[in-house]
Image 1 (cartoon, rainbow, N blue to C red):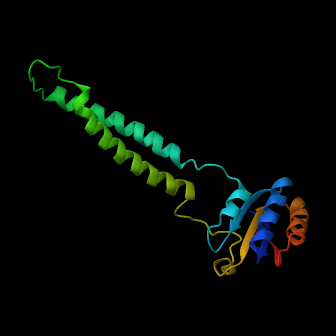
Image 2: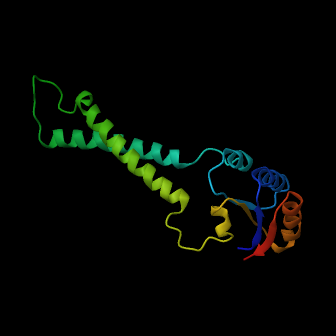
Image 3: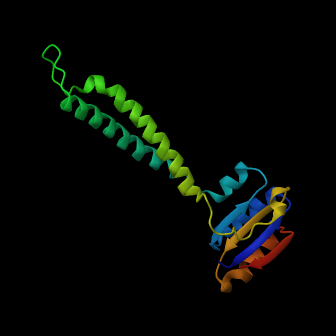
Length: 166
């Protein structure tokens, strides 16, 4: 991966640089921040996370499995009480709900790890220890022919340091 890294001391300058880079469609932008800031989230405008899809799919699979296992067990070991049908859905709702919560929660945790790419097996490109102390960093992955334009945008918006990295 080739790209340009800009170091900013001020949050507003970093937000302005992100907005300008998004307008010029410079490339994939990664932001390093000492603390989570909503200004950066709004500037990046990523939209909602896809982790909720993992939760939905896990919950639906869990409730389906919960009902299925309860009905299978009652058919395998039938206990007829008062002439009622053996696979009755009403008493199995509790089991279906509990399995839905369990599988939905486990799939949510899996989804968070998958989306965050934990564990990272490759070194993070563009990270500088200053980003943990109070500075903000913007890493823009771009082809070599766009590096000059990205460097110019970062410097015009108040970057303290701009460097090209691989």
